Length: 92
Image 1 (tube, rainbow, N blue to C red):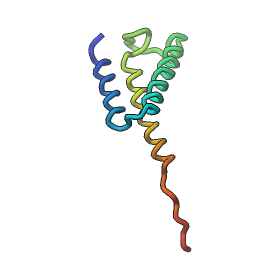
Image 2 (spheres, rainbow, N blue to C red):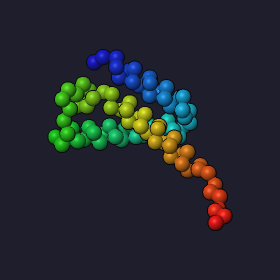
Image 3 (cartoon, rainbow, N blue to C red):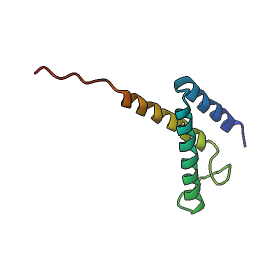
């Protein structure tokens, strides 16, 4: 196992620190990473999906880092959309 997952983990935390820094963003990213990795683990364990070279418990070790980063990104986008701008009525 190389140090690539450690680098990706540090980059994922850096992404959260740079763009979010909220507890809810960290919690969302962590929850998504755990749940999505468990679902991937379930699919691989039951033979529905298969990696060519798994390196940690039937899965690729970089997968949780990608899911964490995706959770933080989607959480930020969702918050920005929820804040939105007040629509002005048209003067037609």
